[in-house]
Length: 51
Image (tube, rainbow, N blue to C red; front, top):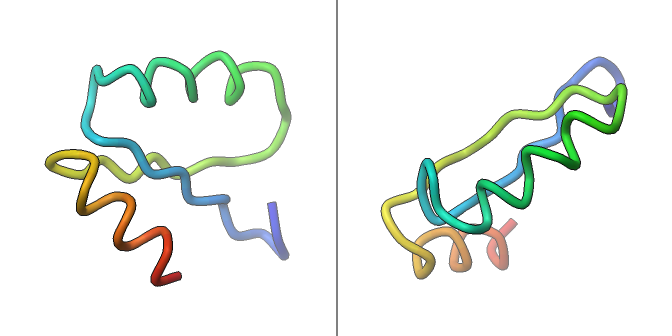
């Protein structure tokens, strides 16, 4: 984590393939993560690119 803040990880929704790919990564690290679920890939990509 950066200075006590969790790392945000976006996916195209709960149960989506990107979300399922994130979960083993989260389990294998000691860092804190915040899953941000979007209603589809397009909004997730737009916000990720926009910062």
